[in-house]
Image 1 (cartoon, one colour):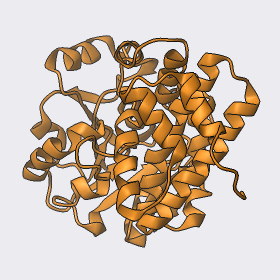
Image 2: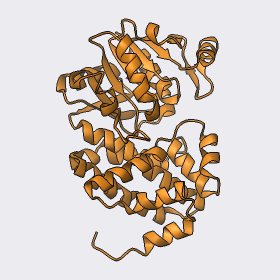
Image 3: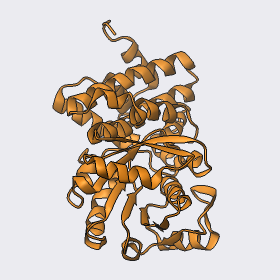
Image 4: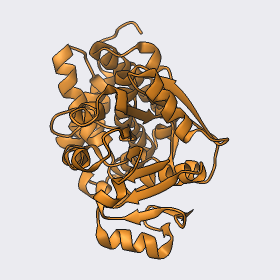
Length: 327
């Protein structure tokens, strides 16, 4: 099959490489023409995922040619860029093409999930979300990894499962699309908080507590939105949370670590170089919590740190000084 991968960051490059290793004809779309030319010339993505060959992958900045004849479209672009891209893709793609979204976040302005942003162009039978503890570098270099693909249609999820399954990449299916997307998005928030703990040198006790309590927050919020609690126990929930809160390859954890060491949000974002979706998702999660009446104390304090320049000591004091309650 022809597989069009949109987005030439580390995640898009890893997914393109995986599909190519599975024998599919893969095209990788880069937004910038100069960057696309560089990838073609170098045969690798030295900027975001060095050491991974792109020789068998057609790289282009021409969206129309990338999409032409593609049975599958894989989106690996940041949330903020999805709405505009979705309109272009809808006008150019094949009528029966299906889309797999690997985007993990909520839109910075609307708070929309990927399924909501792509929904105008792809109905439920042609849309899949891919999420899990999936660090791009490990996938690209063949480290055994598991993920979940979710769709409202069992058959569509099964087709996506077949597309990506390999000896090193085990794919599970799920029909709780809402839960899978919210799990993949909300864990980015706690990854920043966990990184701040590491940057401050707080140790394992504090980090374990913040991860556990925030997992309860994200579970309550997801269930209040209509997700199944069991989904948050899976790969796209607690599995992804473990990986992204611990790994130095996680953008959100890296951002948090820099913040904990005293860097400003702007400086930390610049050094991470790729989009850390947890920043936007923090705001979006608070908006969702107001709509459904779910309290998010960890998320609230993180938002104050990110956007109101609250001192870390005050945020910690606010969390530790909350009225006692049962777990």
